[in-house]
Every structure is written in C-alpha cells, then in structure tokens.
Length: 182
Image (cartoon, rainbow, N blue to C red; front, top):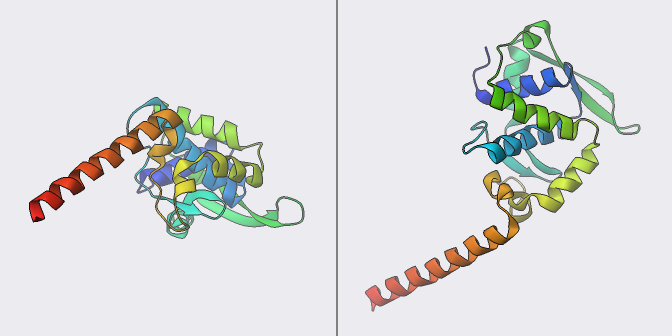
C-alpha cells in the first residue's frame, strides 16, 4: 500500500490509462488536472503533495522522491522511449503489484478519470500551453514556487473582486497601524 495519497493518485492515473503513460510532463499535468477536477466538485484537496511552478507549467514538486517511492516499492517501472518526434521521453508502467493496488473512493476515481481523458490524447506542448493560458497560480508565480492551485478554479470576475477587497482591507489595516504609531 502506498504511503501517501499522492502515490495512490499517480498509480490510479496509470491504471485508468491502461497501465502505462508516456511523458513526464504529461503525467505532471494529469496529476495537476486531477487536483482541479477534484476541487471543482467538492471543497478540499485531492492530495497534500505540493504542486510547483515549472517552466512548462504546474508540476509535481519533489517528483524524484515521490516516483522513487513507487519504484522502490516495486509498483512502477520506467524506460526511455521516443516521445514527440525524435525526442526521448519516459514511459511509466505499472507492475503487477501496482495494478493490483487498493481501489480508490469514487470521487477520487472520477476526478482522475476526467484528468486522464483530458490529457491522454494531447501533447505535452498542448497541455503546457493550456496551463500557461489558464492557470492563474502558474501565471502569478515564479519557477520553483509552490502553487496555490485553488485560485485556478475561481472565476475571473470573482477573483478580481476578491483581490480588490483584499487591497481595500490591506489599506485599512495600514491606516490603523499608522494611526496607532503616531
């Protein structure tokens, strides 16, 4: 049994993709989109694993640690294959042990299924472009930042209203503190 929910999510992504996935960037995006689909349907996070700003869009922070656990546990293997054009890419495959893992709750399975369906037939470049255009947390962050992906699900007008209200509150607090120090 994987130790963290993030491990379970990665294994379920591969299960729903018929046991294998080609492309690290695409796998990162499926993980990210699974979180968004889950958050869109209910409050709370799909996992507590951080998602970081990377040059090609949101990605799995400390991915070597997370994948290492799956490799070391005998749940996942990887090999180099040809990806987009002549460029090498990783193919991730579940082992027999990884395929036979525990079932996930229906709401988790549904979010992951939506993410897999969204990502599977797109290229890494297409998925990166989508996040570059629509992920507010990625747009506002700097490479290496841990993203607050919850803001990616807030409609534009509501987000602008919240930002304006925060600015008003910040100004009011500054006035209070300036008055107290005078």
